[in-house]
Image (cartoon, rainbow, N blue to C red; front, side):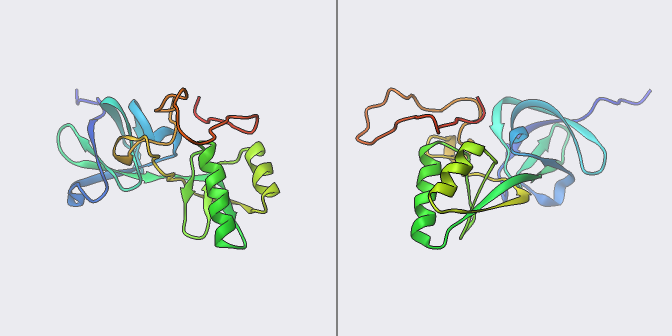
Length: 183
C-alpha cells in the first residue's frame, strides 16, 4: 500500500532566496491564509501538503515553502476583492495613507494608489477626505508594519504587536472609526 500522507513544508524562504529550479508546485493563498503555523493546503496541480512550522509565519508572494523530503512550493498571493484608493494630488494620497496607517489598517502601497480591503467605515472616511475609490480584484500584499519581525509580519494578524499604553508624543486615539482587523 503506497504512502498517501501529504508532504510537510517545514520552512518559509523569502522570495529570491530559495532555489527556484527545485519548485515542485504552486499554492495560491489569500492574505488571511498567509499567516499560519499549521494548515493543509491544496496546490495548483491538485496535490496537497501540510504547512508545519514551529511558529506562525507570514508567507509573501514569491516565497518558497521547503518540503521535508526536498523541493519547494511557490507561494502566490491569490486575487481578492479590494478597494483601490487614488487621489487627484500626491499630497492628498499621502494624507490618505497617513489616515489608514493611523488606524493600523492592512494597506498595500502601489505607486500612485493604495489597496485596502473593503470596510464601510473606512470607505466613508476616505470619501469624506476626497479619495477616489474603485473596486478591484488583485493579490493583496500589505506592508509589514514597523513592529513586524524584519518586516515579515502583517500589520495585525491576531494582535497589535505593540502595547497601547505607550507614551509617545503623538495623538494615537482610537475612536469609533478605528477598526483593528484580524481580531
